[in-house]
Length: 276
Image (cartoon, rainbow, N blue to C red; front, side, top):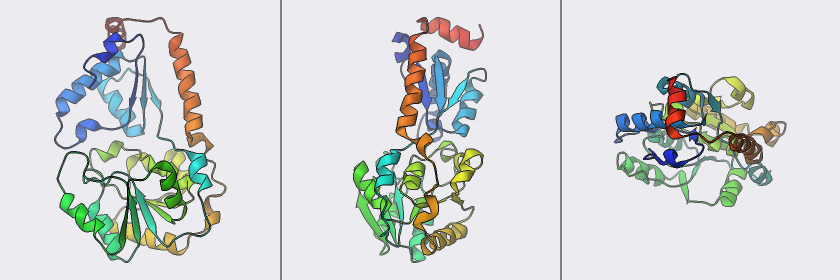
C-alpha cells in the first residue's frame, strides 16, 4: 500500500515478493485494491516466485511480469564452509507461526535431531502460536543462536550439515521463495524442505533439494542427510547466477532502460495498462 506515492514518480518499479493479502489479520480487500492500482501504474513489475507472478496476472492479466527470485551473498557463504561440520540441522529466518510448521520442528527435535535456530521470533505483531515457539526453543535438542549478522550466520551455516525449510503450506506461503535457499546451498548444506510451490520443478530440480510431503518423510530426510553428508556434494553447483552481483547487474540494466523512457504521468500509465 503506497498511499499514492507512485503518482509523484517519473517511473515506477514494483517488485512483489509475497502474497501479503493472505497474512492473518490484514485488510485483504484494501491491500488487493491498492496493489492492482500500483501494478497498473508501474513501468515494470517483478515477482520473486512463479506463484506471485500468477497472482499479479490475476489482478492485471495484460501486464508483463519479470521473474526475479531471491538471491544470496554467494561468495560470503561459500567462504565459510568447513570440513569440520557439526552433526546438526539449522534453520535461519523469522520463526513465525504464520510461516513455520512448529509441530514439524518439535517432531524433528523429538526424533533426536540437534537443531540450531538463528533469527527473530514473535516480531510480526501476532501472538498466535507463540507458546509453541517457546516450547520449541526450550527443547533439549534445540539451540537458539539469536539474531546474527550475515557473517556470523554464514559461519554457523558453514559448520552445519542440513539446512531446514520447514514451512507450513498455506495460502500465504504458497507465494514464498525463501531467501535462505541459496544461502544454505552456498554454505554447502543439504537442504530439506516442505513442498513449497516455489521450490518444486523448473530450474530448481538441478539443486537436489529434498522435498518432503509429510512430517515423517521430512524427519527421515534430515536424519539421512546428516548421516550421509558429504562436503563434496555441492562443489560442482554453480550458484553465480543466484548472487547479488548477478542481480545488481540485472537491476542496473533495468534502471538504465527506465531512464531512457519518456516520463509519463500516473494517469496515462494507468490508462495504458488498462487498455483505455
